[in-house]
Every structure is written in C-alpha cells, then in structure tokens.
Image (cartoon, rainbow, N blue to C red; front, side, top):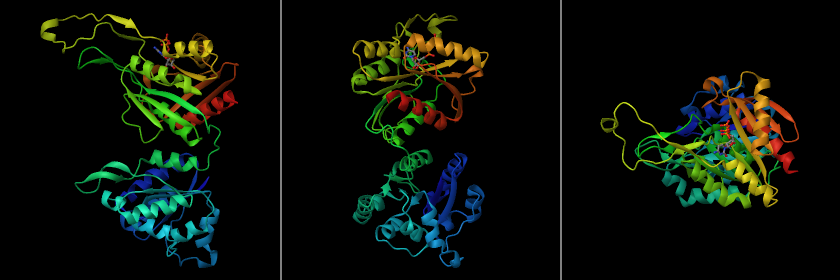
Length: 398
Ligand code: CTP
C-alpha cells in the first residue's frame, strides 16, 4: 500500500523510525513528510534511509511537479505520528502552510493521527476541541497512551506503540469481514502456583494471540482478550481480562462463551496444577535435598467449550493451537490432525516448537488445518499468521 507518514515536531519524532521500519518490512511503500520542526528532532537522512524514499518537507521545491497535491492524491493511507498540539490545531483549521498540511487537504485517503504531548496540552480545551473537530470530519485520532513523559511527569500523552498505531491505521483500509462478530481470544502462558513465590509456567510470550486480537479488531470484530501473564493490553481490545492460571482462563471463557462467535485458544494452558498450593514460602532449610510435588489435571478448556457448543447447538467457531515437537512437517500434520479430532475444534493451528525457537519471536511457521481437511502452511510474521488464520475463520463463519 502507498502510505504517507507525516511526522511533526515533538520528542517522539524518533519513534517514527520504528513505524517506518515495520511498515516497509510488511511490504508497504512509505513516503515520509516531516514538518520543519520534526527535522529538528530527527534527520532527513535517517528517514530517507529507512523509507527508501526522498524526504521533503518544503512546499517550494519541485513546484512544477505539483507535489503539494500529488502526495495527498497518491496516498492510499496517511498516518501522522507523532502529532503535536500545534499540528492538531492547524489540521483542524485547514491550514496548509507546509507540505504535510497540503497533502492532508488534497487527500481522499483515510487518515490516522497519533498525538503525543504533555498531559496538560492534551487535556487543554483547545486541543480537545481540535480533536473533536477532526473526529467529526472522519479523521481517526488515537488517544495517547499513559506513562512517563519527557520530563519528570507522567500521565496521558505518550505516543502509543508502533504496532498499535499501524494496526489502527491499517484497520481503516481493511476489509471489515469480521464486523459484528465477537471474538474471545486467549493468549500467553499460564502460571500454576507452587507457593506464594514460585509457579509452574511455560515459555509462551502471548505475541501470537495478541497479533490475532489486533488483526481481528482491524477487521471490524469486537474482541475480548483473556491474557495470561502478558501485561496490560486493555488499550488494544474491547475487553481485556488479565488472568494467571488455567482455572482463571476457564472461568473467563465459560462466562463469555454464549455471547461469542469465535473462540481462539492461543494460550499455552498448563495441563496440570499443584494439588496443594503452600500458603507460605517453601524453605529449603526445612525441605532438604528432595521435594515431590503432586500435580493434578486441569480441565481441558477447549474440549469442554466444544462439548458445550455441540450440546447447546451454538454456532461458535473454535480455533485450537498445537505446539508440538515434531521431527518433520509430515509428523507435525499427523499430530495436528489427531489433536483437531480430540479437541473437536473447527480449525487447528499447529507449529513445531522443537528447540523452543519460536517463543518470544516476531515470526512463526504454522500449519492451519480446517475440519474439512484444508491445510494452509504459513511462514512469516505473527501478524501474517494472524491474517491468514482470520481468513480461515471468516470462511468458517460464512
Ligand atoms: N488447552 C486447553 N486446556 C488445557 C490445555 C490446552 O484448552 N488444559 C488448549 C490450548 O489452548 C490449545 C489446545 O488446547 O489451543 C492444545 O493445547 P496443547 O497443550 O498442545 O494440547 P493438550 O491437550 O495439552 O495435549 P498434549 O499436551 O497431550 O499435546
């Protein structure tokens, strides 16, 4: 896609580099249009090197090319990140005294603006009124994230993460094939307590589940994310339920299943928990050289959800994950077919985790297997895997 990235003059301008890199890596063509003040924070050479395009912010160079109009007309999507209070004021008032301002007035493409500034400036009535004006005109304006700001202060005003900005921007051009659908997605890895300090856990980072949640939001779905030990993702979804253990996931899934169109069990759920969790810290000085922990089975959340879906004749589409240590692709597919049958789910995403290489990474290689036998091998970013999985989900819903 042809994307114009406007960068305005705030300290967060350096974060535009991450946005450019992620967009170009995903195959988009990125033309950066910085304001003069943005170039006080980040050099044109950096922006040119990362975007592979000449960078210009001057209205009065190459005037014969009518670039002040062409940039906006050629764009399929415009992102402005970071957007300062001053930029918001100019854009809300249609002021086109620089290249970015002209591009924005000349475009018919969707526009996403990601403001970043100090809390007082963001909350000032003038800024609020400008944001309201832009939103009323159909411009998508993200709320800034909360956290540490440039000085000693903290509060709302930080630039959201590059992934969030990009997902929200691409959502403006995406097919809305999941509009009106509710997705319940579990992500991360469970922790089963041994005592108040220790737990039994696993290596899942939650990145794949979060990528599915973001992609589903971008395709118009209402998303509830049940996050097992993945930090606070409440900004990214409609409902975020932080959990720790398998039984907490089970409660969260069961109470929402009836109102769910698609259940995606991407979380790595512990199959066992400690039978008797110690209320006080186990002490080596008291235990000695050996300890035996008795483990008991956790419920199979996906299997029992599927049983309920079948017995109540719900039309919920279910997606299971299988992390296997298979010796070959053929063996992986065989194990995946068996798991698809035992879990009873509609779609199974299988990956080979031999050596643990996939955990915490941004890319993945999976086999997406549908109940009707269709197999799709996908290799690439976890975002790409999420998109291809949601293609299968959309056809299962249809
Ligand atoms: N799962 C679940 N409840 C559990 C364990 C797993 O709902 N108690 C879900 C996972 O979220 C995943 C799928 O089942 O979508 C497969 O998980 P996996 O651990 O690979 O399968 P298991 O059923 O545990 O089978 P095994 O350990 O024998 O491979």
